[in-house]
Image 1 (cartoon, helix red, strand yellow):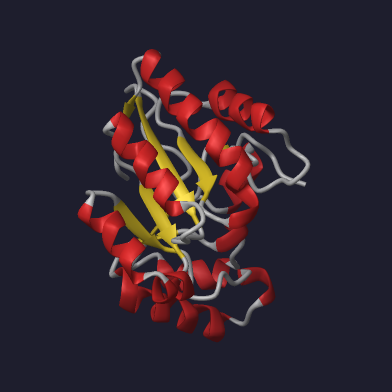
Image 2: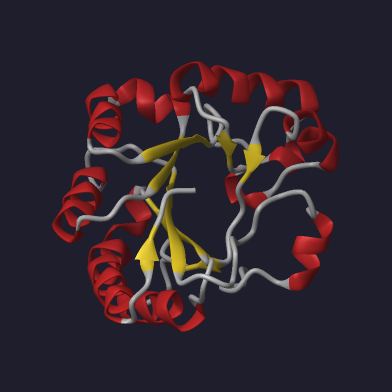
Length: 202
């Protein structure tokens, strides 16, 4: 179960986290979780290059270790990276000490002040320790590309229907998202550019 548009009650639960940027300007923020992986990251980067836009990649540390050339390409092409833990841990099911150690292990690779908890799940006690050093980036629009039952067409509609000024949009850079990302990402970018949105880094 997931909600495409981030609900108000979640924003209340994590009030110091960033769910969206200013609604006054037609700027949007494209983000990718979980990579880098050879099966999808090159497609994502090629698509971003085709449209000359930049995005933010919340990388899993073990995937950086496995694919350092792809991580380097992300940086060389002017994109932003964030910390997504080393092993894609669920904060709710992880002790504070282990969760924070795992983030620090990933931080040795990303060297970023941006953090997104996997699944958007972290204990308030964990986030309290992170807020002094990190911007906790959540999202405004969840495309649902990770949902194996979701059609690529519906994924695309999710992305464009709910995006507005200041939206932080989440796609996934993982294997199960491949068919939906390959279909929806180029169409989403083209549509949003046609509506005069500007893609920005966080």
